[in-house]
Image (cartoon, rainbow, N blue to C red; front, side, top):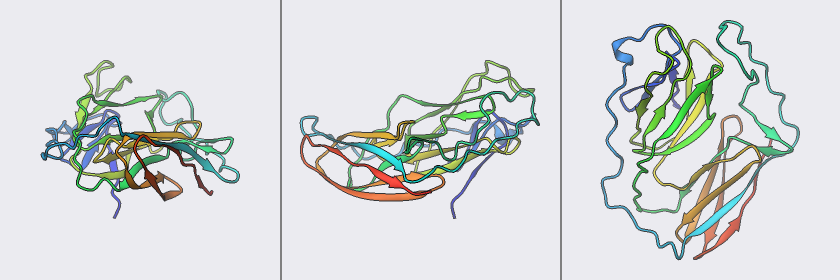
Length: 244
């Protein structure tokens, strides 16, 4: 069963390895305080990659046919919620699909990779999460920022931090008080991932030569996979299309 992380306050906090809590409620209980960070994933030695042979695969994620009309979100229940009020579950322009998580699903074998020391930031403004889809490596820190005032949190409160120790793809994060607030976190074991931009483009670079299966995952349209063989110093283009 695919799990969903429910959010009880619009400032996200962590609970064990399996739960993020955020701050959309007026009060925080002791259980909602930030938990200790998860142990860094992968204690085995990291696998070096020769930059002289590293390859790249890039392309465009496309949407065939007309994109579904974005639903209008009613934010009237909270006067503090301002800004764009269109749903983000399908964002497509001129047949190019944004917010698709792309990663190497198969082909890396037993290689181990060290998680980056730099944190990635999940922020919020206008009662929306930013970005809508994000990726991190297992063991990498997610910094959860809060720049909106509510009765339970000062406007410039320190960011919370969270790490995940295992791979999980398109894990939904939602707010219980603001039901339209939803985003997705993907946790992977390698640095070879990307999220398609507004122009549908993605790029995976620094790959060692090999045979790979790439996965393209969208919150509404599901997953598609594509195989690719990369030789030393290859730079291959691979487009993929989803249908509404």
